[in-house]
Length: 304
Image 1 (cartoon, rainbow, N blue to C red):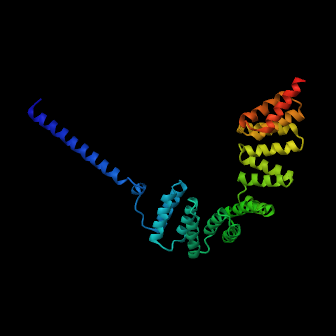
Image 2: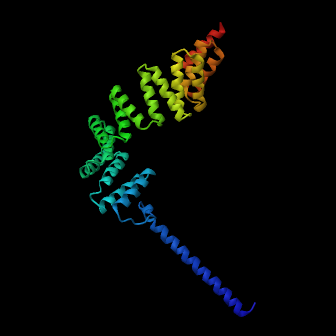
Image 3: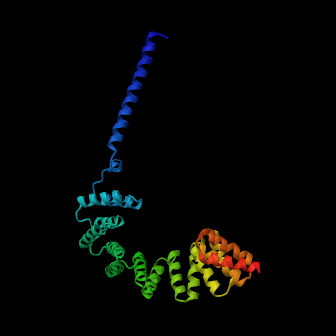
């Protein structure tokens, strides 16, 4: 190799080393910059408008980053102190952190800025319900419905609130309203079915649980409730089918095991299958007194 060629190669190697050292230094610098509680903010573009900060906060909140959401709602408010949506949303964020006093303060400020903002009334209703102020929650949800009668969430919230208050009639009324607005939601049909079943309106309950399975064929609780209806109506084979379907979806559904044990023992006179399901129940909950009592009873009968 000629002297000039050796010099040229050394120059290339030296240049590569310089580039590598510069890259390493830059990497160390950026790592130090990103340390600390606001590290995630350094990776984000610097937004300027309140709406942009607000949208960024919403994304953070939807991904469970509540503190990051709060910081961006505050930035939105700094840019625009009249940005009512940010006050309403930061209030709910503080509620998720169980800081209800701060939550209510922000929500009330948002409502003061824009009284016609339905979701702010809904949010403050959620907070009031959480801290046991049922009357204030009720009024807030009703105001939200007046402002936006097509938004289903306030109907659902009112139904839940009335259930907790023990007013089943109003709970049913608002659940039906919710179902009308969201007819394909299986949970609304399930809750309505449970209400009908508790009130002894079995045909309506049956219809609601069947609706549930139409929208969600893997809704195990609906199969179980259908089993209960068939069980009480002495449709034994149908009840067994529903309970077994429940266990296919959840092998630890203990009430389905116990009910199958009862059906095989009392209705089918099948000690082997009844023992199987009572033992299965006991394997799920070793302290289940009823299953243990029935196992002992069947075993004693076998000794006679």
